[in-house]
Amino acid sequence: MPSLSKPQAILCDRDGTLIEDSHFLSHPDQIEWIPGVLEALKFLNTRDISVLVLTNQSGVARGYFPVEAVEAVNDQMRRDAEVASGAIADFYYCPHHPKGEVIQYSYVCECRKPSPGLFLQAIADHSLDPTRCWAIGDRLRDLEPGLQLGMKAFLVKTGYGIQEQQDLSKSPFYDRITVISSMAEISDFIQNRKNFTRSKMLNVTPLVG
Image (cartoon, rainbow, N blue to C red; front, side, top):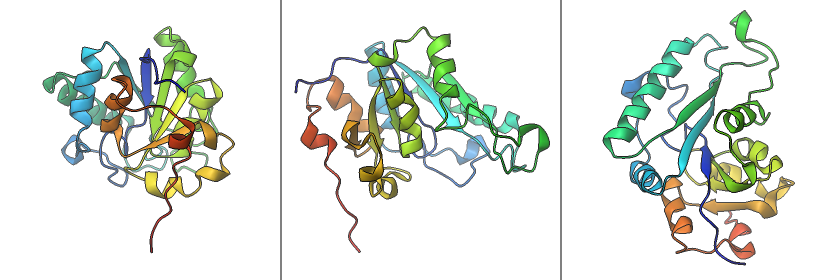
């Protein structure tokens, strides 16, 4: 199978994929970029590949922090990317949870991943062809909406990725998911330094111990 062609856009998760997953992160001071990610954003920017961030933020529904806290973190991440000569084209977040404490956000919605709402909104807003886009995340729920829409998908081993990797064989999309070390590795595929092969997609390494 040949190497991948350059994607039109990358639709990626936030916590555990771009930045370290600090439990219910709610302040810009808590942001800790995963090594190599800012460099990857710079590379993607030089190739005119849009990066859209899609994130579940149930802490809003749970009453842990307001929507303004989510937006403050997102705004700081956008600034950090720009300082590093990268870019994040847009952020989409779901503040809902069916078992939340804040009434106006506590219901079953269409935007909480793995539901497709955030993906559909991003596609509509940016006139994307989903078959030319990639989905990247540290959980299978980050990838499933994109896979259903025809995207290529990458599971990173940062965040919850190693844990999620153990359930990969149970996913109906297991043979369409490539496991990579982190978001930083994505530039290798775009530059054709790595091939998108079936053996790579099925490279599921069990945990030791």
